[in-house]
Length: 81
Image (cartoon, rainbow, N blue to C red; front, top):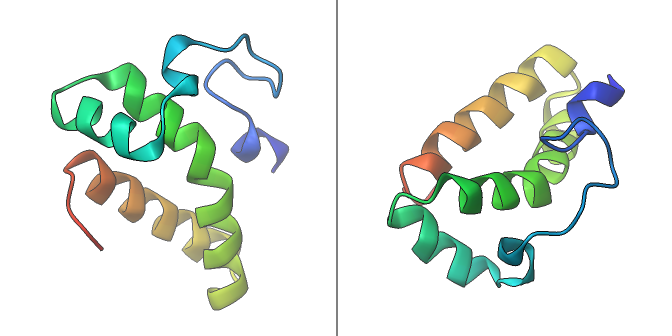
């Protein structure tokens, strides 16, 4: 399960990028403009939190992962949940 919590580079200690210095609001503007790297930074910031909250609510790892996938899909579209 630790693989679920790694960042896109497969480890917890990747080198910082210019995007990582941006606020969430700035990153969302970049995502809405089609910047996939900005989405990756946002996903890396919040995917663990989303999975943890979902797991606390549903008490089932499989269902929590489905919730995270749903969140990710909606987030990519820029929709509010």
